[in-house]
Image (cartoon, rainbow over all chains, first blue to last red; front, side, top):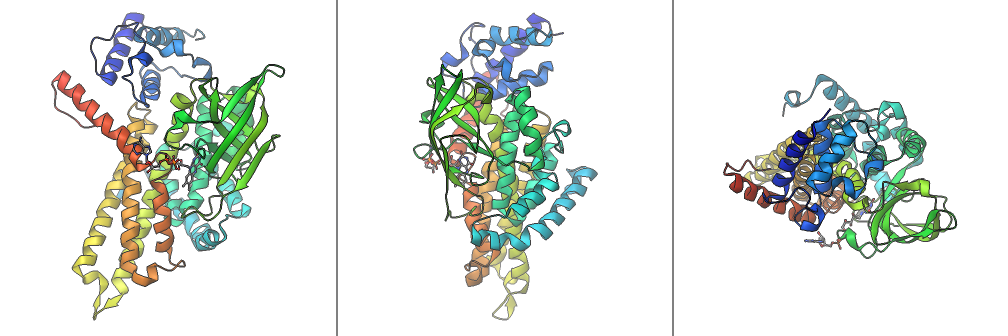
Length: 85
Length: 394
Ligand SMILES: Cc1cc2nc3c(=O)[nH]c(=O)nc-3n(C[C@H](O)[C@H](O)[C@H](O)COP(=O)(O)OP(=O)(O)OC[C@H]3O[C@@H](n4cnc5c(N)ncnc54)[C@H](O)[C@@H]3O)c2cc1C
């Protein structure tokens, strides 16, 4: 199972590197920053799948699952504990 | 190049099989199909029987479940003979990949088996008469039908490969200004298909214009969720489209190289072989070097997809960008080397010349690749400066 603090650190690190800012708040809406490119969504998805061994499917497509560092980390924790997203 | 270093024994064996298939079932007919602007159903059935239409579909759904490198080798081998024919596989893999990733259990159960066996051909409908690269401006519209609980589709799509033969279309449009993708069976009410002939290249790829007039779409045909069609659904299909197109362009590049070297070795000019002339050697050197470089980029892209790396989307763009441009250059030089005989429609290099250009347009144009890759490279450099470490490139 993925520990939530650890997951958040890993997700934050990936997102900060992807959008090149350090000061992004964990709850800041990624899609409203205007900093992400057209491939970011699938890159984040692929990273999460590979790093945490979860598989994202059609039922998981909710903006609330990926809109921020906190949201993505919480999604990973829920998903890897077998809870429905 | 000795490909053994980069490929497994199994992959090398399969590549040889794919090349044999192309030499017997594709190459001898490519000229005829190009002239007729059509690939006969029997040839498509052969693709299905060989399992090639299900190359990227897992065995549990009746596909071959091959790794992406093997998928790339298949597209290279067929691209060597006929890029229009390979286009059928490209689109089949795009719709299959999108369904595999985002389809409901019911959609996967219903469509993947027939797609894998070639019992049904798929099409991927993004482009419209008014917009291609700028997909956010799509005018095709879905509307909710409160009475049925489903949707109603209106609009037009254009330049859709396989459109003439496809039994099912993955159609992208807007629902309440949110991008949405839906499966639309060919026999749907209000769905009209008009063949498009006389393309520059890919003449046999069965392009069509699609018109939707109040087409009823059951809610069970929605793939993914509203709002995710351009950020998540299309990119998974386009990822396979780019890998396929890159590898097909690689095959075309190999074709140009093989035809050019063979011709240069036998054609006499002023008492010497064409290939002894420095300027011709220069063209061939460039072609052969690009061929080796494209090979490495293509296998790298395939492997990144096999390893499910986040950078897989960038590596496939790099491979597609390089291989398609190199193919255009090689085809132009191949015609030059062949002189007038390369300018007649019966010459394979004339067909390669027309086909190569198409690879620079489909699955994102060269300029769109430059825009995204250029931005990505600069972005990476900024990140590297921030972290104060040397720039590793991609
Ligand atoms: C043989 C063939 C098969 C095809 N099959 C399919 C299919 O199966 N499904 C499908 O949906 N579509 C298909 N297409 C359409 C193809 O995807 C589009 O042609 C392509 O996306 C480009 O769109 P466009 O033609 O509208 O050109 P436009 O987007 O109008 O572009 C025109 C020119 O402007 C450049 N340009 C556009 N935007 C930018 C930018 N931001 N910066 C710099 N330059 C820019 C382009 O590179 C191009 O040179 C096919 C096309 C062909 C030729």
